[in-house]
Amino acid sequence: MSFCRNTSQQISIFDSLNNLTKREQKMLKDTWAEKFSNEIFPLINEERFSVLYSNKHASRPNNPANVNIGLLMLKEIFTQSDEECIHSLMFDLRYQHALRTTSFEEQPISKNSLSNFRAAIYKYNEEHGVDLIQEEVESHAKEFAKVLNIDGRNMRMDSLMISTSAKKLSRLEIIYSCVSRLVHEINKCAERILPDKFNPYLEDGHRNDTIYRCKDKDIESKLNAVVADALELYYISRGTAIEETEDFNILTRMLGEQTKQTDGNIELKPSKEISPTSLQNPTDSDATYRNKSGKDYIGYVGNILESFDDKNKLIMQYDLQKNTYSDQQFSKDTIEKLGLQDMETNVIVDGAYYSENISKQASENKLNFIPTNLVGRNQNSDKSGYDKFGIDENTHEVTNCPRGHKPADCKFKKGVYRAHFNPQHCDNCPHRTNCPVTKQKKNYLLEVSETKLHRERLITRMGTEEYKEIASKRAGVEGIPSVLRRRYGIDHLPVRGKVRSKVWLGFKISAINCKRLIKVLVNGGKDSLIDLVRNHLLEVFCFQRTFVAKIVTFPKI
Image 1 (cartoon, rainbow, N blue to C red):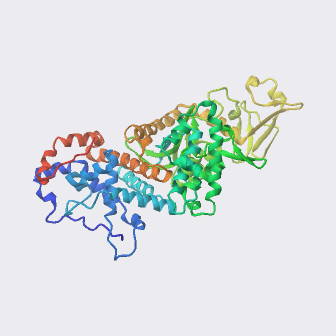
Image 2 (cartoon, helix red, strand yellow):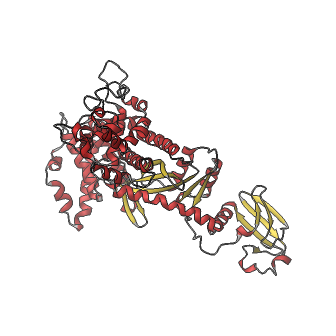
Image 3 (tube, rainbow, N blue to C red):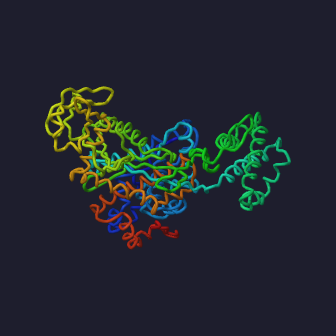
């Protein structure tokens, strides 16, 4: 299939819009479809997706890439299935107007168009490491920000745990599943190399007998027996065509994670030695384990970077990684991706995103990371008082104590400030009991590292009303994980694997941004997009004259 640009976007004399009365055309222009058609659809970059198709022009041309992308965006906006959104495009004039297909004699979409298009995106990402959907969604966000006049000088970040749709398995189930999958794979081969002892794995009831009807006292023996079968399968498959299969690779990975070699023998590792990155389910080999805030999670972690002002907000960047990925690593990735800014930009984050090194790296790019709390010592506890000393970080000098007395000498070495103060000033000082200096034979010593000094100063700033007001603005981004879960079902994706899950997350992020943009464009931001669509459903009878002998399907809201 060769790539061709969508050139059929001009209204023809046979366009279905010409069948509408002026009143109906006016009503259509007041819907979300008009704004989507004028502001969003033109932003879809068809050329970006040309890499998914052949460069042989003699082959059959592709379905319009921008129609596929636009329809997938509308699918998420209205939380539809593939079938529902395809029916909407076929029979709903608003969908056709939004995607500029009203002049098509037949809509350029078929039953498997969306699934095939997504499959091509997955394959390209796996082969080249490039997420085309992320590039597209984030490029749209930049253009949306221009329309909404968001200058990007204030941003905020949050992360969310995303559960895999794969079933949570016990250790015995994981090992058994790996063995059973490889047994079935070998059984398909023309040259059967499977010993008869593995035939029970092909029987329907063997899994239940091994796992669910296993008594607690028998679990260890069952584990050892299944691991022995796994090892035998491993050696049987080596050097054959089976060695190239995914099931063999998964079994090999499982053995490396679940067993260890002791005195020449292979035995199971203790449960405590199993890594959180180990295989959680053979059907989702990318999912990992993490315990956060006392809860167990199996799956992935998403990260959201939102730009905002007093009126509007947009998700500018997002990412999805295995859930062992730390918030601080997300911070580093974000700093690198944002690059050097023209002006100072505030990024409000949770304490888990923040560290002294991250703050320095951000400052070099004119990014001011503002944590709402700190990981580690409670910032509300008694402070050491280092921040009250006059310390010039440019000259690395301690200039004075809180009472204004200068030190007798000062040194800065390997990131640590050392200064000596005269005893006659310190012995009778009213602040002596709360002062962090240490008494020595001849003088008093102040010793503090740069990291500790910065933390003390940050804790002091965090107590000011000005800082609290800025930090309070981070709360807005914390609603996004809730929306992704409640409305968009992010924990129940119909796909598995990091690549596929990230593509689905991308379209859900796009839906949130599109709804925010249309909300402003349609009615000045007063009503939500869904409310507007619900109101227009009352007027939909006006469009029925264009659907003679057809069943009209409307978006599910």
